[in-house]
Length: 176
Length: 290
Image 1 (cartoon, rainbow over the protein chains, first blue to last red):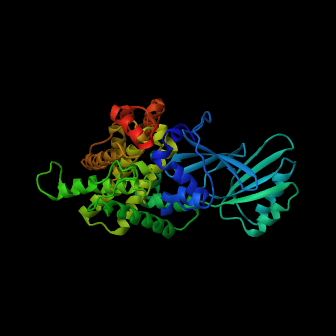
Image 2: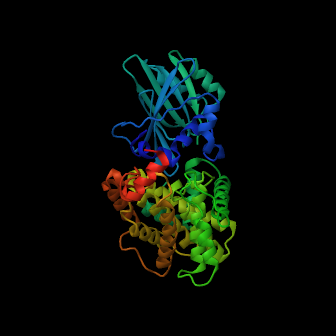
Image 3: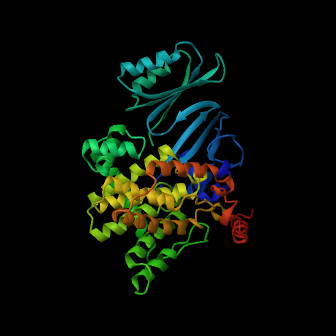
């Protein structure tokens, strides 16, 4: 928890809201108030650690998520007011997810032509890209491409993209 | 799409339509959903707002921390008697805002308008005027759209976050949204809506965000109370023909600059201002043992 979050997350219920979100609750779910207990009952352990994430929005959190099998995942997101959020980094790589559009996040290897192969399927499916953000760890290593779109991605396009050489995984992020 | 009030005013003039209609049309164009869909989404939010505004008028609901609660009921009872200084209508409105706020502090369902910490101002202001003019549900939805447009302009050009811009950015913006909306409900012009919005922001310019123990309770509830009066007063000023000397877009930009120069102790960190008083620090210790 960074900045104002670090100082006020308990009083503002930020802890409950974040855990509610991780549990898949919608923003108008009245169970958010009980989310910490619900997580506990599901054997999910949560720790809130005040920290300094540098020059980011004062309401910023870095979520470090570890599955039972030991897989890890992290993201940095800011609550910018007016019900709006921004996910500014995923696994240490720059991102631009606003939640205003249906989006897909593709984890892939940094290889020449990958973005071209991905976007070609958007053209074939007549799906318009609202924004595209690509970032990588280093040359030839893990990369991430986040695409915000008008409309939504069909099962078909997701399957085709996942079959592209070098694509590691795809996550769908629904519009808020 | 519009980036500021000036552009929105021009679109209203070009389309020869009121603010609310243009706001909904543009919302529909940008999001690719129908006008009916948007109106029904707004209607859902108005229903949630209305419930919250009436929920604690007749019963005391303590906040999660146990520190506050019961003020909406006190004021609502007082407003029904004769002898208050402000009119009963206005005080009822303030009681609606307090009720909405108490629903928030007890972790009930509210609409962030634009934020949870300022959630009482817009619904309470709309409901006061709706009652006065016996407004239809459609007129309320129109007013909601105008408020949303004003909020979106502030968001695009400044901030709605107390952590970034202080309370002026939260309760100030909520009042500006409410003022513009009620001016339109009362038949005011686009210019008058933005004059009212500009004046409300000017009235609280520099207002800090200093929540005790970091809880969104003290002084936030009372800033929602003054927020309603600020919105309704500025709406009346604008409807009387009084103009804002500085145009809305410039006021928004000034609010942002002021917000950025507020030290972080006074931007939702629960350190300075009222949070730093002996009472504030004592409450923090009591609530969080820290």
